[in-house]
Image 1: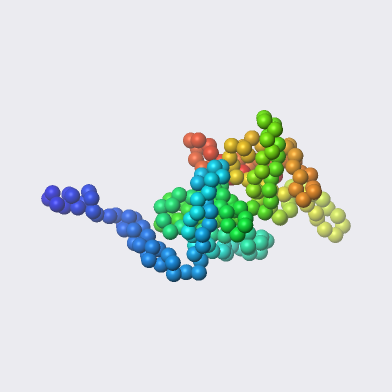
Image 2: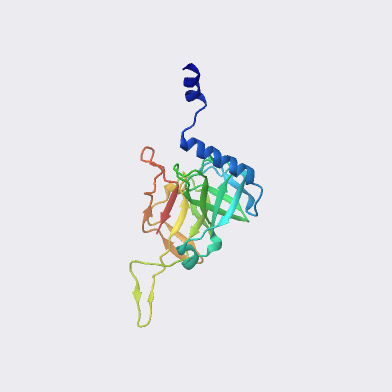
Length: 213
């Protein structure tokens, strides 16, 4: 029975391992045979601003909300050759002369590795009150105006200039406070609420993506 025990301990695979290995072999064999193959820059970790070059399959996203009320060109899905590649929400990417933020990553149950990203369409600037440093961060200004306090007229209901600002959660952006002022497109805004509840886990309470109203 020694040979059988050795086989079970060192060579045998459960169905999950066998399927993932077969899928990785299939991806390896077909990786170059596509029009989707592109080279992008990926941040090494959230907030590092250090980028490495990596090959991906870059594809569009087909979702009702994206294709009806959003600009579909601002949303992309990246698939990675290494199916164990680590991607997380809030990671930045650079390609096509733009920064992009990851908003949905692969779960550990999925046998493939991809990430959904959205293009940063603005730059957020503010002054660090601790040292006077001017900080710049690529950001997403959602272009769908909405408000809990809608202004009614005879003919239409108009939102009172409330927008959602999406920022990478890092050491600098976590210092932003409620009521802090900013100017976007020559219009003054202030933060009325901060959504920092989308934690990666409960232990370190890391929030890699922040939403500001």
